[in-house]
Length: 194
Image (cartoon, rainbow, N blue to C red; front, side, top):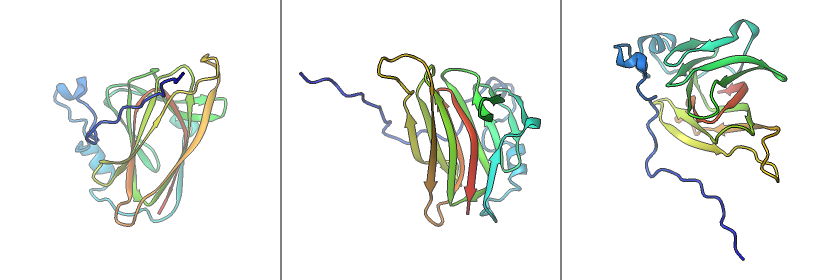
């Protein structure tokens, strides 16, 4: 007897890297990549990072990032889409996470472009599947990773899975950010290397 294998659907086209329209955008405020505050924080240029850096989340950054908002951190900019995000304390230190079990929508825009990105993430069993996309300097997804929620052998909802994702870009195709959609994810650190 053959059992069917799980199938992950992959769209024929690369999904748009721009966040969907938010309620704030429909009221006249532009919350896309062309938002003046994002351009100002990037200083109007997309230079290569001068040195390796690590973005962690400090106690003074704890709090809610409302849907359609922008939060500038030391090495990156958090741009939320249709859902809120939050920087909170966990049992393993501070993490950037979502407020919902599914339909999260967040972009992490690096202040400079980098050739290598390594991020440490945790998925929880009681959440939906997660989609991560590595963004190039035009904010297009060049590589995607789909993480299915961890399941035990009895499909219960206990525990979590820590994993480290690393991406090496080719020269002239450096990365400028990460797109995160779908299930709940906890990001503890992002290392950026030229």
